[in-house]
Image (cartoon, rainbow, N blue to C red):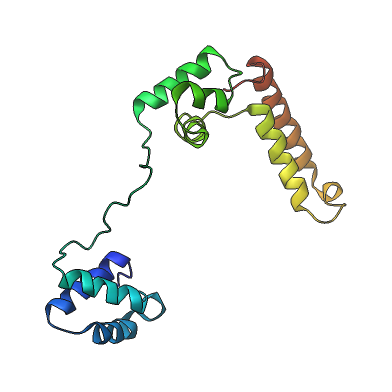
Length: 168
């Protein structure tokens, strides 16, 4: 069964069109949807909207700052700036392109897949060690753990040296 808001709004619209009152609709929906049911005041509000002639079950666009969609031009511009200067910061990119630092971060890490190799490796190891409460955790690891860690370290070190610690 679909418990989504839009599915419940469709039920409200249908039952209201059949002539049922908001309180009856709420009772019937509470029986079917249980804890997943829309709030009573929400059901009453949607009943009023349908009585006023509304036919759409989706939310209307809200005022405020529009959601910025990252397009291919923005992705290309960020990529070009990074290729020109591997040490450029997200703040500098945001100012240059007039977009938020959050969008810059999203493009760099999610769209382009870039990451600071050395910093990423160090934070990953630090997080693993911090998660362990007992101080003896490191000494309890099998030999293969140390061998894998050393190989990983060498690989990361080579990558970091080859790009001077910049974005890959």
